Image (tube, rainbow, N blue to C red; front, side):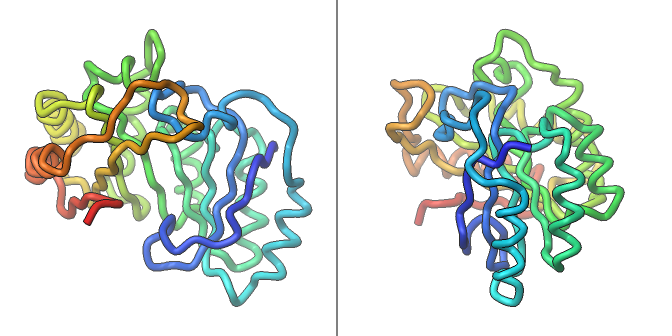
Length: 234
């Protein structure tokens, strides 16, 4: 278990709860818009599990939940053990994931270890490789995770970070049709978030979409989603 960072308090990462966010090292995607470049490859840990648990014990009664992010947390072999220790302290747990390891997601959720899941849906199936920065992507794994969440086994949100060069009305039309094919249920909750250009972004040259484009993409997805919002824009 490599803990690379800790945000000691957030009101944004877990809807309706005061939380902290734990960042785990390592990711199997190379999304061009990723702003956690330092978390992608192997690196020394910043916090030990013991230090994290000691922090959480001190914050009992002040924090409601722990968000586990990355990187891609499901790559960590000791993830379940960590979550069990966090749950034993009385915290709700939210998992951020790219959906590439459905067996881990299912095991954690079916064991009652997850209270909320946020899954990144990168783009339409045809554009997934470009959007994840990989020559090929195991779409079957992503689809399995999506189908699992769409069947409401655990509370969840889906989200897409929109970069002007990577996302189009056509790709969002295909994304919506993909969701419909995967489940008879509409997605419960979907957030669009605009790409933000930062020094830590993996690839240069991307731009945020206009407000008008974000609104148009939201309208395209609306028939496939019960609740759809633009996050981070007024």
